[in-house]
Length: 475
Image (tube, rainbow, N blue to C red; front, side, top):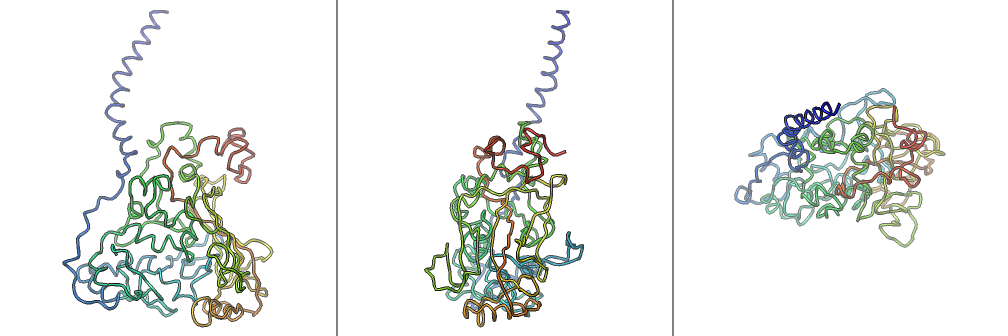
């Protein structure tokens, strides 16, 4: 028996020497290094070409600069006009709730921030990748109005004004000569300021990401990654999908585009979570880490002559609540969502969910995902019981007249819905996925952050009988 024991030990040793050690020495490092190298899956780009000596002359309009760009980049504008950065509208997709084929996007969807762009084009389209979208007649086929500079300016001085046209005082020659690969400054100029100000909408996108520390965002802070490193771009089609204006998950960015599930984690206690928990849930413990984000907006309070503060009250917009360093709300998410669409019926006595992630505990494609919740009170038609689109910007808009009735009449006409002349304010809610502001791995959530009596997750709301550490996980 003793001899057998020794023979077994010798056999095990030979196995380790012959099979296991070569795997560790020769196979594992490549996989591990690829998983841990932050640049392994990032596109390799040639250095940007200096345009200082390539562009000359005098420019008085943005369109003139675009024409100059097209002399060398002949296909660029025709590529741009087929992207959602230009159309602000999706291709037709099937609404998972109604089964009908619809298009959805900033162009035609209500939200519970500034509510919608119809009748408000000249103000909202300051962030459009084009020039001159001031009303419903804008020609989306006219490549002459593509704005190259908003994404490629490297001076930091380029500004857009009413209807997306170039703001007064911009030195167009200097900006045109500076162009290069888009940076966080280019993308952030619009995306950090969605909803009318810094950090208002998303909660995980704000000005702290221009020059963040590693603790604010490890990708941008420690490694100086740019937005386009993850939001990879081909023929001007930028990878990424905002749930607030999308039904589907097409062209979405995922952590696993760069991080291999099989090799990123070696602890089986962690890998056992990967089929039910999104990467963001553990790796983004809080959002709005430095700059506050809006969590409540009450339009019914607008129009009063009260002391003003951009974080609590503005006469033109009503009252607000902001917060910082927020623990997300967690729910199941399979990458698709449902949306309130213009003209949909609603119950003013219930909170209308404007954008809601789809998924549940029995859906194998669903993961527990972190969200920001934004609550609002916004106008609705008390006869037809649907939410209304107010005109706020420009002549006749609420921000000029402070007359809800006339602004709702004008906005409804632009949106193509009837207005009874009777309005009230109803509660609404939007979910905003949290996917930026990734913390260093040493700050990722630990077991007791979620499990136990003080855990942050409401397991019963997710469909579990209780904490899965006690009751077991998804079947």
